Length: 118
Image 1: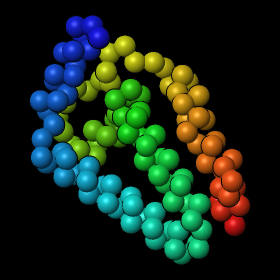
Image 2: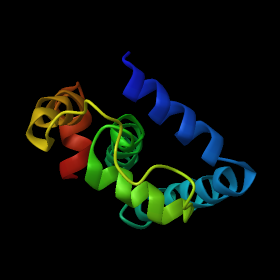
Image 3: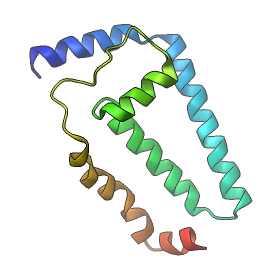
Image 4: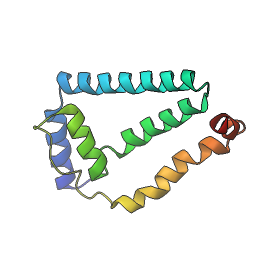
């Protein structure tokens, strides 16, 4: 990790506090309630897998991809964190393979495809 990345991590970690953690926790709880409500309403447990995959994708891309980082900043409404994403990040198209690796195995497992299409 170079000096610019260390400085960014220092600014990012000092700008996050209990209020931001609470906001993210509330958004996560609403996201999971929506997940549960949709899966019960549609009687489809495959939706749970999709929502879970989206949760992990968001968490892994939050500091690496500018669009997702901007969404995270809007959720937390924190002006203390850096405006720009972590330095040395990759362009958006380099994450297509990550998304494919995380999303495609869900319908390809034993019963995943049947659950999603049901």
